[in-house]
Amino acid sequence: MEFHPAVQPAATRSAAAWCFAFVDGQLLVLDGESPTLLPVSDGPVLTEAMARHYLGRCDGLDCWALRLDTVPSGWRGMPLRAAMMAFAPPLMALAGRAAQVLEWDRAHRFCGVCGTPTELQPQERARRCPACGHTAYPRLSPSMMALVWREGELLLARSPHFAKGMYSALAGFVEAGESIEDCVVREVAEEVGVRITDLRYYGSQSWPFPHSLMVAFTARWVAGEIVPQAGEIEHAAWFTPDALPGIPPRFSIAGHLIRDTLAAMAEGRWS
Image (tube, rainbow, N blue to C red; front, side, top):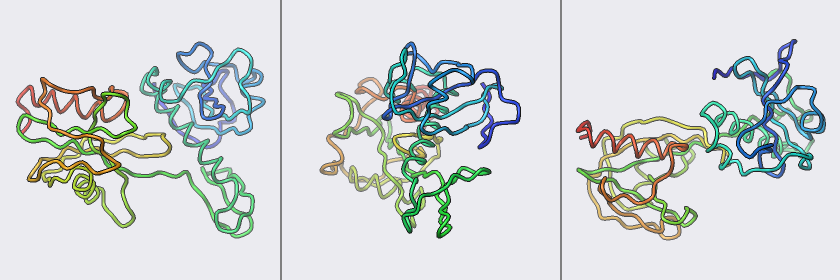
């Protein structure tokens, strides 16, 4: 599936559309499996939306982010994370995009400088204050992820909010004035007390919980014993490939990062 982002629909709209509609943060579905392809003229999901934002076209079909006040008859809400896990990657990314656009729109209805109601701009994804001119764009919070390794082992940790038995790579938000690389070194030292080197960029993923951009690396351990950061890390340890705890599914970049690194280690491509 090929997606082309846009702010305004074309003069000729597609006969059907992907509708990513939300009520109280939950994605509306008919069958609990995926968003449903609807005629653009179809009733309450489109016509009764409190907020409507055009996202672009996916395989020639218009895509909309919608926020409704109540769940229409025949629909039900589904947690975004659960819904995204059921989607193919293009629709997973679109669902995340829709959620972030709607959250930006909700959070910037009033100017953060003078309090005046803001106005949507027709040619860009922005809300502008007519009084002072302050413009608010969709917010992105860059954060790093680091999978620390040493010969034959990976350092995995769990936060208190993780699902029972789940461990993952380390992660944290970039601070003002800090590079991604500096953030990796600082966060690893803060969260588990070890020193690292040889950062290797792995990839990135938009993460709509609520508006992160995850930038993932691997890093080689240099020195230090694991000391979990109180209140942030419940437990952390070195794990061998044949004795891993529960790890995230491939729906998240953490799941890809850990599994791809394990595959490279097994094939002797990692040093």
